[in-house]
Image (cartoon, rainbow, N blue to C red; front, side):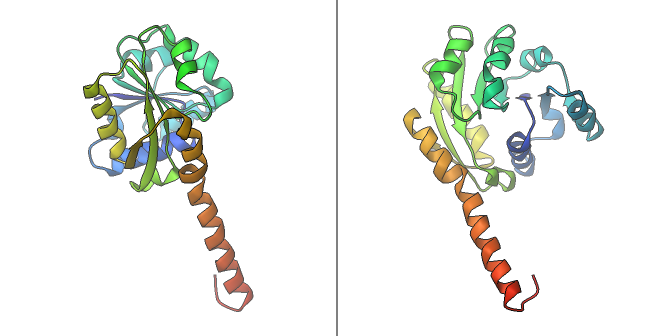
Amino acid sequence: MKVGFIGFGNMARAIYEGLTKSGKFKKDDFLLAVKSENSKKRLEKEGFNVLPLEEVVKNSELLVVAVKPKDAESVLEKIALYLENQIVISVMAGIPLRKLEELLPKGAKVVRTMPNINVSVNKGVWGVSFGKKLENSERSKVKEFLSQTGLVLEIEEPLIDAITALAGSGPAFVAEIIDAFAEAGVKLGFPY
């Protein structure tokens, strides 16, 4: 199965890392489309298959859209030109299913998700809400795909923002607390 990433920032890379660590995916299974020429060159040096957006869309079964929310509308309008039967998995914060379905062709299969950074070590938590057009078998396929990187919780869409705050940001808050304890230990005389 070919998986396309539209955008390959920190979260997309974390998802990729978890998927490859699962043992079920190899670097060759992924196609990347990125905006910046510098990112393209850097990723190609790392051995990634970086293609124009239309090629990634046409040649992927699953599309993970991981661009900044401010770029969502323009990117989704470009994806719409080439979308056929692919499943679009959004990891864009704050972009509701309604908006995804509005910007993509009628009948598009869309999934709104929010993972946390722990997906990179296969211990993540995903909040997932499905658009109306996905069949049960397609929902199962998406859950199986995402579960390679952690726990998948199918939730009502209004809870996606809440899971973003809790599970998405939670690990960062815990890391801050741990760091504060480490710094306190250093001040008390322990080596960091």
